[in-house]
Image: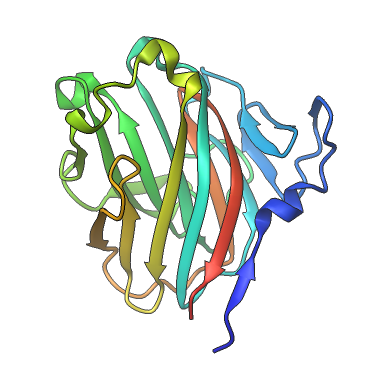
Length: 220
């Protein structure tokens, strides 16, 4: 099959490049305080517990997702989360727990729930906007604290978190690359083929953050 590369970052350039704008380009805000700042999609509320923005993006076969996340505000309460919904059939246009039929790939910082200072990679299966459950034990995929021990919470806005994910829609197998270790990834199954694949969304939980440099590539 001919290799197709979708550079979403080019679509983002349709939004105004100066200051804040309510025009989100190809994105639509479901919940939260979303704005375009330059070429970055930014969510500014630290109170919005289920902030989410989505866009139309057909997904099938073997897909590779790359983008980066920049911290803006919100970790002072020792609770935050950020992630991406893949393979959405019909996105929910308002505040919601889940997002249609989809899978949420998530990074959470929640010492109260998991004990100690730590970040965990998680995957959730969404059935509809009100039903979504984790598909493994919550602390199964820990990013070892030693790999980010030099990152200071007071200086999080200095760092850019690179995200790279490969998903085989025919089998449901996923590779989520660890941003702290080159070429290291977490591999797990979403339980079988993914047949939805019409929309993509990004979301935050009790966190202000911006997203940019999107590149979504169909490998085959």
